[in-house]
Image (cartoon, rainbow over all chains, first blue to last red; front, side, top):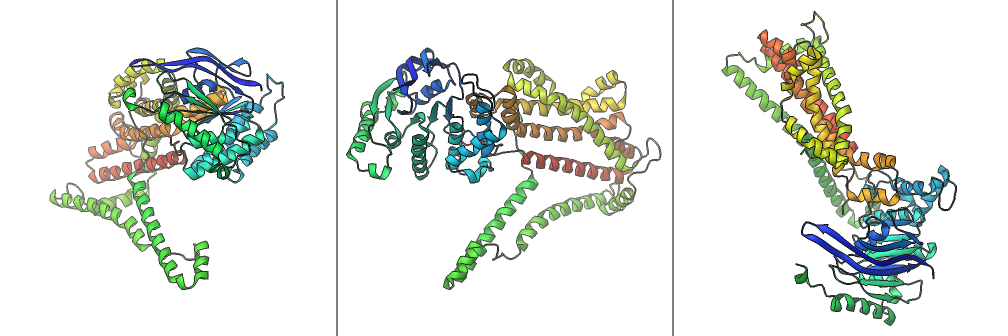
Length: 274
Length: 317
């Protein structure tokens, strides 16, 4: 198992008007290549803060984050992010939204791998392939305003995957979708990840989603100063089928373990927060 | 601060009419569906091709579009006629004014000397001054707005100056213009420049400050170059705000040019109004008021059309 992401003693504090707010402390986590890891915890526990740290959008107050043995000094296309609210640019078509990332990664000669720059036809072929992977070839020339929420999220995934990132970071990617669309996209994601062998770190608040998708579930304690409470390995065989798993004792056992952590040991007490 | 609102009453009215049309269309398809209950095949056919079952022409919708504006216009002319009668025609009647307008517009582009030119020339000269003054203001105000919005230091530096100078009536700048440029025409253009720079500058700056953080995060994650950030994210995101600024600026400029020309003279619709007042030709003044209104309406309408064409759905989080 090759370590891809290493998080060592990371802490994050924010300066607010009321003073210094400790968001995360003592975070230690490694993610192996090809692993699917979900971060779960109550809202406000710092899941997204941790993901933003891995993305390089924010810098840790203490500790180090490494990606492929290099320190994460800022955002980069090797760590593609799928945002919760899809964050597509509304004035570009779906094709152009995906092309923007493809052009940046493959349009110029790569310094690290020495790969030559690709011509326009190759870049467009990559874009088409990414849209085809999420089943949106027909909607390529539509603007985000003209397609449904599930389709927008698919374009966001296509944009991230088209850059062939080392790690795919997803911040509650299906949180804004209805239950049926969410299930459909989860199945699609499982299939795409199996095919592309992607390494994924995903933030979620959905227990079923975490158990269905993950190799490991990282459960965070309640904030402020949240840290990793427990890591659960999910040894369900792949490919996974949600219908078959629905009454599998093993699946229900994992589910129970996460629920137990979230609602018994880390029951969210609003009084302490207020 | 000025907010980005593109709705004109005209657009709102047509929207509500469109909604009513939609509703009546649904009603008619429902009716045809119930009729076809005993003939399922034809029901399926009409459902798959709704264009076949065309709803009857929407006369009620047409009446709702045409009648209220006509009534409004009628009210205006009615009050005008009453005022005209009660002042024993020192305010000319609508009919007299109309006859004069027909004479006037039968030859709008005559030239009988520097101070006696057709109404068409007067309007065109005013529009030219507005265009030059506004164009210069856009060339300065929009880039300045980008800079002030993008860099907090510049924002803090210029905000007090803008707050101080913006409430000043543009006409107060006219003497400065006359002194510096030593001519009536450049002074009028200078006045237009001053009055139309503020809306564009402020709206552009607000637009830049309100570019959603999500878009900037996308730029960071994709590691876009500065040029791509400006052309693909910043500029399209700011465009609606900028166009609102442009629309407000043109509206203000058209208001101010009339007053400026009254003071500076020369050929122009404002001077024309003042000249006709000196001739005690009230009919022409009323015609001028209508001309100014119609030109302003056309400018506004055209700019709203441009603005809506460049406005995209905001990201809903």
